[in-house]
Length: 377
Image (cartoon, rainbow, N blue to C red; front, side):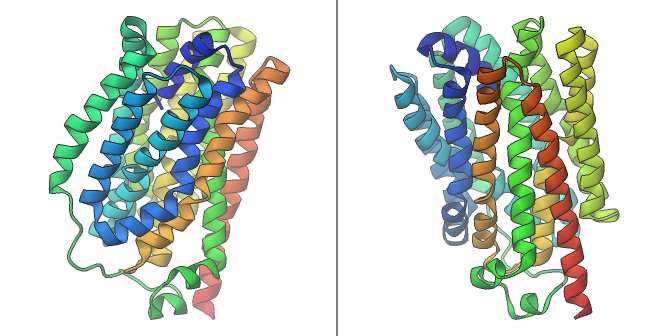
C-alpha cells in the first residue's frame, strides 16, 4: 500500500502519465494473483516457513535492484514483476491459509486476528514511506524496505509451521466428503462465485488505495496529511477486521460482507465529495467508513473458501482462487490513472469501484445459495 506515496515522485522522475506509472503497481498486484497457483502449490509442498523466507529474500533483492534502475520499463520488470512474485509468496494468501488451518472452529476470527498485521503494517509504513521519500528519496526508501524484509520477516518465520493434522470441521457437499481436489473444485459453482467475489474486490479496493493520496493532493490536501490519511485507513481497519471476523462466524459470511461493503460505499461517496467542497471533513469520513471495510473481502472470502474446500489440497485450490485477484488488482490500480488521464478526475473510477463491490457482493450471496442447494440434494 505504501506505493501510493511513491506514485507522484515516480511520475516526476520518469515523466510518464499517471496510467503509465500506475502500471508499476499493477504489475505487483498482477503477480500477486497470477502467482497464486504457484504459491499454493509451493505452500502444500514446502510449508509456510520456507515459502515466506524465500519470498522475503526475492522481494528484498528486487527492491535493491529497483533502487538503481533508470527507466520506467525497467522499474516495472524489477519492482513490479520480480518484486511482485516475492511479495505474493509471503502475502495474505498464504498467511490466511495458515490461520484458517490452525483454528477450524473459528476461521473468521483467526483470519481476522492474523490479518491485523496487514492493517497495522500499512498504518506504520505509509507515513514512514512519506518521511523517507521526503528525506532520502524513493530510491533510498526501497533500500530501507529491503532491509526490513530481511531483518524482520526471515527471523520471525523460523517459528512458522502448520498443525500436524488438518481436519475440516464440517463437510458441506458430497464432493467434500470424498476429499476436494483442484479438478473437483473448478467444476463446482461455488469456486467460480468465490473467484468472481475476489476479482471484484481486488478491482475496487486498489482504485482507492492507489489513487486516494493523489486525489486528496489534487484537491488541496497537503501531501503529508494525505499520506497520513491513507495510513489511518489501515489503522481504522484493525477494529474493522476484528469485527468482520467475529460477525462472519456468527451471522454468516455473506451478511457480514454486505455490512462491510455498505460502509465502503459510504466512504467512497465521502471521498468523491472532497472534489466539490475541498473540506478535510470528507477525507476524515472516508478514513472512517472505508477503513472499517478495508480487509473485509480477504477475511470473509478466505473463511468461505475454507468452509467449502478444506482438506489436504486446500493450499493449491486456494491458490487457483487467488488467480482471480491479480487481474482485478492490476485493473483497479491502472484504471484509476487511465480515467484521470482522460477526464482529469477520479470520479469515474470511484463509480467503477462501487459497481465492482455490488457485483462481488452478489457473487458471495450466490455461494451461500449454492451450498444450501447442495446440502438439500
